[in-house]
Image 1 (tube, rainbow, N blue to C red):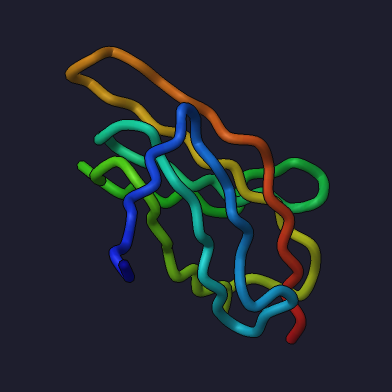
Image 2 (image 1 turned 135 degrees about the horizontal axis):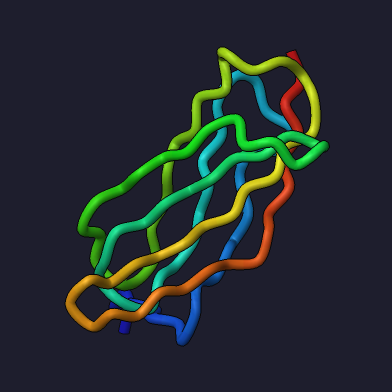
Length: 103
């Protein structure tokens, strides 16, 4: 009755980050459709890449990543998640998420 059901989407799903606004860290929640290598790329408001996080060999389903932004200044940031499965040759790119860092 109270079983947890694993959710495996057809594409990368972003569930947002919490807390938002945050200082200095936030948890980015997302789900991936296949096992593979995940990249989380953080951009500033002018589109410059400020951080690229590599998560190797993650299983399909819901995941989260604790992002520490203590080295960044206050402001609005965007993140995009991509997945590469070298076995199947498939790649996925997510929509963009928005987060606010307040120091």
